[in-house]
Length: 211
Image (cartoon, rainbow, N blue to C red; front, side, top):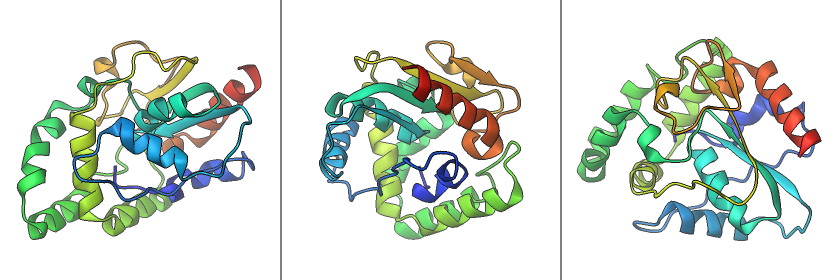
C-alpha cells in the first residue's frame, strides 16, 4: 500500500498493452468500492473486454473495479478477497495510524523500508519499492489502512478470479486465505511480481490467452 505504477516495471516489457492507472486522491473515509468506481471513471473510456488485476491492495481494488469494467477475469497477485487474510498485527495497527501525528507516521515509513521487499526480491527492485514508500503521501497510506480494514471483501465479482501467491508472503500469509490460490509459488515474496517475475508473467499470459 506504499507503491505506485512503477512496481509493475517487470511486466511492462512482457505486456505492451498493460495499463497501470495512477492512484487518485481518496476522499475522507472513502470505501474501497467507492474509490474503485472513481478510479474506473478516471480511465479512458473503452468497451473492450479486459483482464483486470493487481498486487496486494491493488488486487482488492481490481475485484471492486471489475464490477464497473467489461472485465473477462480478475488476476490477484499476492492479494486476497477479504481483509481477514491480512496479517492481524497490521490490522491492529490501523486505528493507531489514523490518529498518530505525521511525525510518527514519517518515522514509521522509515522503519517500514527495512521490511518491504523481504523474501527474495532482487536488490534493485527492493530499492525501488523502498523509494516508492518514501515518496508515498502519509494521507494515502492512512487511507489504505482504513479502506482495507473496513472493506467487506468480494466473494464473487461476477467473472473468473485467478490468484497467484507466494509461500513467503508475510503481509498476506497464504495460510490465511479463504480459498486456495490458483497457483502457489514456492519461496514467493509479497511483492511477487518482482521476486518471481517469470512465474507471474507466465501466469498472467496464460490467463489472458485462456479466458
